[in-house]
Length: 121
Image (cartoon, rainbow, N blue to C red; front, side, top):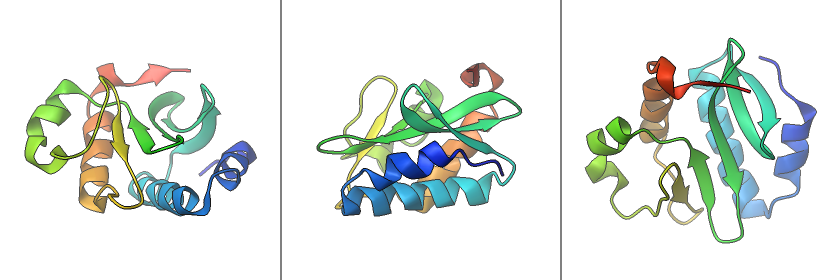
């Protein structure tokens, strides 16, 4: 797996709780997709596979986010996502309310199974 040192630098700038949370997210995704590349895209840590972006994550002032979310994923996991804030294309979570590993793995699998959800950057 190719890892951009800028991803480590991004995480190092975060408060400790967010850093630990996003490092865990990073580790779960890396284990799920060991051949993925890690890079910075649009100022956020991102995962790419075969040159195509499939997921990014970020730490913000009051929450962390993961991008993108598909309508099908949202519909299929409505109960699991209850109580999490979100925007049209992102899911928000916090150290107090992290994403369950199983949900994160499902999101990764969903994105990789949908070529239309993958973008070239």
